[in-house]
Length: 355
Image 1 (cartoon, rainbow, N blue to C red):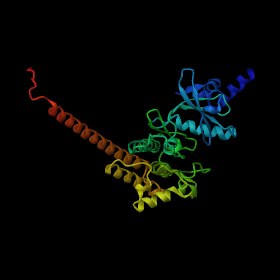
Image 2 (cartoon, rainbow, N blue to C red; image 1 turned 180 degrees about the vertical axis):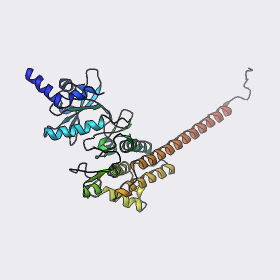
Image 3 (tube, rainbow, N blue to C red; image 1 turned 60 degrees about the vertical axis):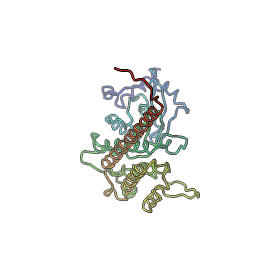
């Protein structure tokens, strides 16, 4: 027991515990998180990434959390990854970014404790045809706008700015209200003020979503996130994954297939949902054209994340206004029918009381 305590104390100090315990972040014990996750049982596993696995846990006060645990690779490398992710998430505060609740410093490689996001990944809802959350254009547009807001915040308003580095539908989560939350900062980098790119020591990210310019040059830029977000928009529109399999069983490049459909006026043939009316068709076409801009092979020719976010916010506002107008017209129509029915059925000899 004494040896175990000494090891935990040593890990705590090496992992920056003296400094971190004075920060506004909760410090968890190793035993506390082991109990919460049923000792990291397989049935508690929520997902797996480059850094490690994420487990669902329930604390003694019944708070549900997500615990990120390293794969037990090289300690120096894992610690560097942890320090990088912690330095990013501990200073990021946005309603559309997953919150860091605390950490455990008693293990060789520290554990990160995040808020638990109950409705899983955007990818799950796009590709599981049993999910009805994305059945309407209203929800698809809203989720796209919320994710864009988070990325715009990381690029423009976070201090220092952040390049996410691995934007994909698996890293966009939906909470109990189906609000989008951007997650997983294992591939992210902090930028110096005025800096817009960084020469990566190794290519990180996910094939199909990776910026081709970044793949060729090894230079990661804020526009690399824009490209990846463009892929997510196409995924939201078509319901297909990058490098998907066509109905004939052949592999095809989703991006080329999408751009070809857009340029030959066949966009509405490849959509994963039905547009409700002409207004929605116009909005869908606008988002499709925005996606194409994000997917430009040259980063300098892509819109900024702020421009993307502003355009989606504008389309969302127009959509909500249109919905409100339709609801108002339907209400007036129903009230008119109700009034007409009442007058038709009322007796002509009815006595009206005097006030």
